[in-house]
Image 1 (tube, rainbow, N blue to C red):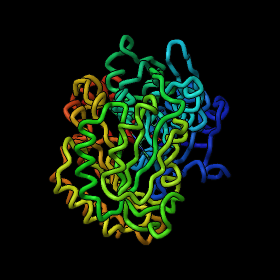
Image 2 (cartoon, rainbow, N blue to C red; image 1 turned 180 degrees about the horizontal axis):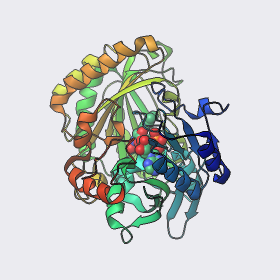
Image 3 (cartoon, rainbow, N blue to C red; image 1 turned 120 degrees about the horizontal axis):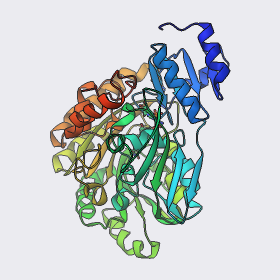
Length: 461
Ligand SMILES: Cc1cc2nc3c(=O)[nH]c(=O)nc-3n(C[C@H](O)[C@H](O)[C@H](O)COP(=O)(O)OP(=O)(O)OC[C@H]3O[C@@H](n4cnc5c(N)ncnc54)[C@H](O)[C@@H]3O)c2cc1C
């Protein structure tokens, strides 16, 4: 740890409005924990900011003292870059304020808000912007990587709905980024990750959604998985943009609508939402009930915010996690064989493979319209390998890597930056794709010394 002494810490504390947590503080242990329990880092300082001015103080402190700097939004990122060893963490978890302008259909949200915070604020007015599928995820990290979820086929990636941002850059200046203010920075923020500064405020466009939506799960036995996947592929290709259907293959959790004999058995689940009038959605989802012999279903009209939380119980904080991800522009039969082979030898009861169906509005912008480049991706596959016991690390990670290698021949080559683990430095260029070189130029303008490097890093050109 360079040049850090008690006097400097005391100086920072004397001007800081939030909390400065040191390893000797009671709150330090919980503050250094993030979603993935594999991450066990010990920062020298956790600066829990409550204002943009606090963020400026934290950035200046890191730069002036030569400290490694990490930025924590929702703390969800699998790679664990929200924490660092020995350096300073700019922790935005207390900065969650939202403000909705229903007439202009805009929301502003602070950089530490979760998807739950944002949805709760906008759904009061029956409005929403596309976000992810787990409500405890941070808006900041999700947005900066691109962001996709149940509404993306209709309204695009999260970044396609970003109007402006307030950013603390490496010099400590507070700048605005939008189509007309620092447009190079605005372009880079929309998919370039946390490389360019700390975003203290995002402004998004909103769309009418719900507040009640037709959504839920239809579950089939794994013995029917290949045929279900083949029919799913045909169905998704023709589905309207309001209808999103994702597939999840795993062992069945003890869901009340499934017979007990199915609990713990391998299944394939279709997770669906119709982001329009539920009456129009009903006949459209009917074919999904006839892809085989369903084991059970739980589909109905429910609040959009409830559906946004539906997967939270399976994806709680504190388990050990290792992920592998591929983008696909087509799902081939050979891939289905590989998926089913690996689902039949899962390394842990919580592990799952899911295919998120995007497409429609996510494909409409040109690949260089935003830093997020993967406009050809129609499916994002993620292997959520998840377990509790440290003793299982080697076995679980090996399973995930083996499955990943076996599925690689069917993938498009691109990968979603937000799903990269810590050990995938070799895939960072694939994650930024053809936009990498332009991102490196913007990085040179805003962060030439690479102060913001605890991320899937873009080296200044
Ligand atoms: C259970 C789960 C489900 C998920 N589902 C989806 C999904 O449906 N769709 C999807 O698109 N993604 C999804 N993700 C991935 C998610 O988008 C990334 O993990 C994202 O990085 C999380 O953001 P965060 O703010 O919570 O993370 P953090 O770990 O806090 O931050 C991740 C990185 O983002 C940067 N960062 C964070 N906050 C700021 C800020 N305010 N300013 C500048 N940089 C910042 C930093 O570089 C940091 O290292 C999911 C993740 C999990 C764990």
